[in-house]
Image (cartoon, rainbow, N blue to C red; front, side, top):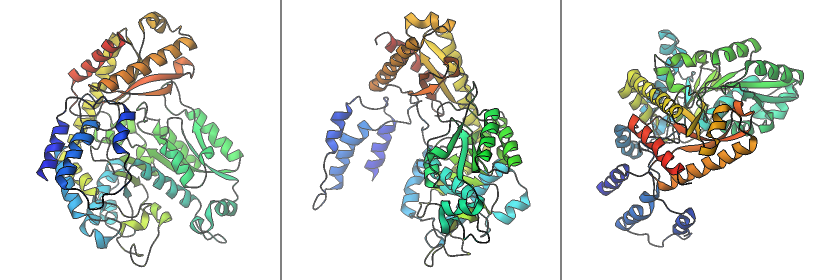
Length: 497
């Protein structure tokens, strides 16, 4: 097994992001559909890993990998993964997790208190109370969002006289019982695609996910939110939830949560905040005010594998009301019994590993100050990169970063003056789009560094789809020098494409 650890360490020490290999060639090595009759030896499989897998994995731990929301894991988390696997606890029920059940509830309470800030008495009553659910650990942000919206739906259409409940009669029966024509969700244009999955999951369909316009900074328009609420009421639609975003996946922008919360309270609508990316800003004394109003949210999503620096497969949803999750409660005779401590009673997922150990460990070892340091440094480096980009004629900064995601694009030499003067035509922007696609692809092929790309609606270009280079600066190993080198590499590539 030491050989596996050696392979892992050698992978992390790679100077490149990944091998430059054609995907059509790569997939040829994985065309077998037969299981070996007697199996192969461990040594032979280790050779396969060393030759075929590791060279072609993506080294997301590299300080020059700043394109997606994945980065270096703390060494103590990596070392602990073997223990978590060895324990093989299943947190769906107490009988297969025992003490981990209580550790998980404590982990959730620590996050809950940081966001909601209730009293000592509240937490002493609710942390380990069988009847209370302060949140769920999930397998990721997607399931966290789905869980929040399922709770919002069920609590909006709860059992009443003549109606057995949505879990018995379904969405159509529930809407009929309450006299609604349809049900909708309202959310900003920058919503994560998981919300579309959630709309499908809770039975309303993505056509009833109503998008709220954004302003020039990519934040939800309060004016349009009020108009969309008015329209929904006129159409006799149940508004299951308003969803605000704290750290949009594409841009990092944070919606005006405090104003949205006031509207949600006035209109008596469930407010969910998708803080999968930006939630950990709460640990920073300098930047936490950007989340002002989040304490009013009925539910909050946080994704552990992002800025909590945990492995893939752990997210979290928090509930302001400890009884909200009762609306999705299920039980069974052999597990998740009524009035038990079983965590599976009030969760969408069933069997889950004890990933809460990672969360509890990281919160304990880093503490608030540790996470504050990560957040503050990430935002500082992002602003540094933005300032450097402004100094180069070769680039155009498309949006001032709010936290630690940055959008910019490369400009071919013949269009730089028109870019500065704001006189680009649609055709010229299309040419710049193609230029950035070629640049990003070439940088990825070279494998020395990586930024991602996306297509965004930038207000200054009248909602034309603009191809942008997207940087996510969260890896604590990424230094100022690496940021400068990545930009210099892009300039070198621009001279050759």
